[in-house]
Length: 172
Image (cartoon, rainbow, N blue to C red; front, side, top):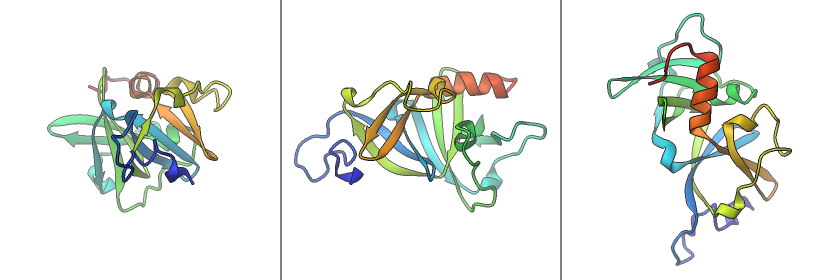
């Protein structure tokens, strides 16, 4: 069972201090779970999709704009970025991981957050040859646990590559 791995349960109930760097465990799609370093996350929002302002003539990956503390934030569909089925537009709530990147704030829309995982440095491996070559630029690496592959996301790379190819304005 995946949850039995000490780096996924954070050492809770074990009696010793959790080891490894903390990552937020994101469910991007039923087939895709990713980890995002906690150091790159400003906050996580769960809100009705009607709070996003749709922008006409934008690629489908762009869900819209969001006002967070008087800052305008672009929100991208992370599943769509990974060439997976986009999020359901009719869902009652959308989860958005708000990243603090060198380009400014960027929102990544996803299915849900499933807690925090702690990974020792040796658990992260190169994604080359393990995942699709199209995903590699957005990843710091990957980690295979039990039968599941976790993508280790690179928030700065996502902001740089996705926004430069999709958006014609800066995300900041």
